[in-house]
Length: 110
Length: 116
Image (tube, rainbow over all chains, first blue to last red; front, side, top):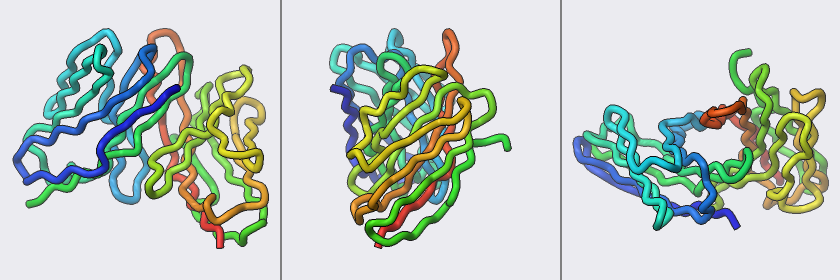
C-alpha cells in the first residue's frame, strides 16, 4: 500500500541547516514533493523532484532522493525564524493520487 | 476567484447531525481532492476526482462519508450522522494535469468541523 512517514518535530537554531527526512513505500511514485504550511494558512508547494533525479537545488533548499531506499530529504540552509512551519512530504503514486506524510513541525530558535 | 474556495470556514454541529462541506476549485482544474487534517493523524487522503473518470474513494473512512462533484467543478463532501472523531479540518485541493505536468496541488484554507 501507499504510506509516507516523517518525523513529527525538528528544532534548530537560527542560521543552522535543517534537514527533514521522509520515507515512502510506493516504488512507482513519479513525483515527490515538499509542501509548507505556515500557521493559520493552507499548504503551498515548496519544491518537488521527479523520480529519475537524485538531487535538486533551489536557492536555500536542497532535495535529495534515494530511490533505492525510498528516502527523501529536504535541507534548508541558513534557517530563519520565518522558516518555522509544518513541512509535508508527499508522493504522487500511479495516476493522480497524491499521498502526504503527517508533517514535520520545524521550530527555529533565535 | 483565483484560488480554491471552501465553505464554511468553521462549522460546529451536534453529534448525529449531517454536514455538508463545499469546495470551489480553481477554474479549469480537472482534478479535485479532499483531505482531512487532524492532530496525530497528519494529512489523510479521503477522495479524488479526475475529469469524467470514476472517483478514487479509497480513503473514505466509513460509509457515512460521501462526496460528489457536479459538472466537473464544485464538490460537496457530506458526512452523515457525525461523530466526535470526525472533528478535523477538511482540506480541498485542485490541480490541472496534462502531459509533463508536475501535479502541484493548490489547497483551500479548509473547513474546520467541530462535533460536540
